[in-house]
Image (cartoon, rainbow, N blue to C red; front, side, top):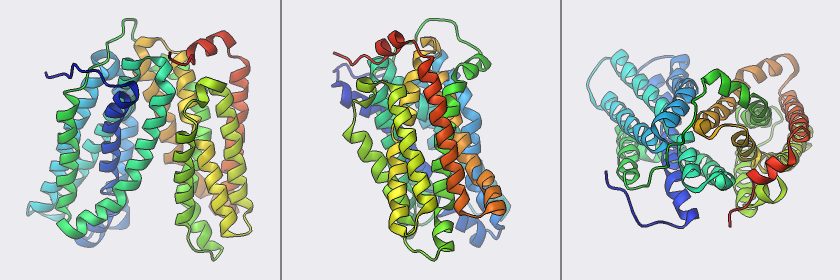
Amino acid sequence: MNVSTKPLPAGLSIMSIVCFNFVSYIGNGLPLAVLPGHVLNTLGFGSTMAGLVIGVQYLTTLLSRPLAGQLADRFGAKRTVMTGLAILTGSGLLTAVAIILPTSPWGCLALLMAGRILQGIASALISTPSCSWAIGLHGPSRTAQVMSWNGIAAYGGTAIGAPLGVLIRDHLGLAGIGVCITLLGFMPLLFARTRRPAPLLPGVRLPFRSVFMAVLPNGLAVACSSAGFGSLTAFIALYFDSLGWDNAAYCLSAFGVAFILTRLASPNALPRFGAYRVVRVCMAVQTLGLLLVWLAPSPLVAILGSALTGLGVSWVYPGLAVETLARTPEANRNSALSTLSLFFDLAVGLAGPVMGLVVAGFGLAQVFFCSALLSAMGCALVLSLHWRQPAAQSAETLKTPG
């Protein structure tokens, strides 16, 4: 296997690995706006099946998270990421074949579903192991930097993927989506072969239950924060429509811009002030932002609230990842980060149906009040965890690299 021997600067090296997550999220975004319409209008299935074609991918990712962490701990993050890229290539091929191959609607649907399942597995094998690969190469002191770039890659890739999918469909046809996903898996796979692997760390590999219980406190805080993001994406358009307002999409744009700019503008926030302290402030800002959306007298105030929510969310996951790794044996680093991601997936995935019950009982506005309440509860939980944290351990973990 060809591995580059010329060392890159740390920042560039981190980006050269996090880029695998970026292309994975672009691939995830490509089918979002085009496959449901194909299933509904071309294949003739109902809206439930159209939603299932997309939803099965995210369910598969959720279920594959523990496996991804265990594989990376046992066989190495690089090998796990490369396996994910190979599976992503296969997902694209299945998607292209489903469109090109003359078959019955049920046969086409089966191939599309198989492609989405493979893409869900690939996403789990690429996302968190990419982070632990970079952390393994550059040390735990780079965790905040890795997580910062990883979040930008994830949100940026999703934002690019969905409109790009529409563009590809309009110019190359629906089969072009499958071809592009294939290339997004295969070309980075060739590049991944040139990257240096992180060393496998010695130590006892803990069972998933033990890792889960160790991550649980920080995971609950991640879930409390992520529910707000899930509620905003699921209900902001309906909320604006119910009030007779236009431009709900600006809320999501404001969220994304504030999220990315905050990370870019404050790269040393975690090592300088301490992870729990930064997370606590961020969750307080997120709570304020969601309350502004709830009480907004005008669209402009709701957009401002969305921006504050994005600012608040920005450092929550990286900060809690830093603290999680500080409490996890190094040999179980991948499993711990995958488990933390599991809480994010659950919160975002459950936000729609759970908050839908809130809408049915109390109205759309109360979704954002409940999300603010969850964020405030998460802030209180982080405060409690901070008080119980040994100060010396935190300072050593967050020491800025020389």
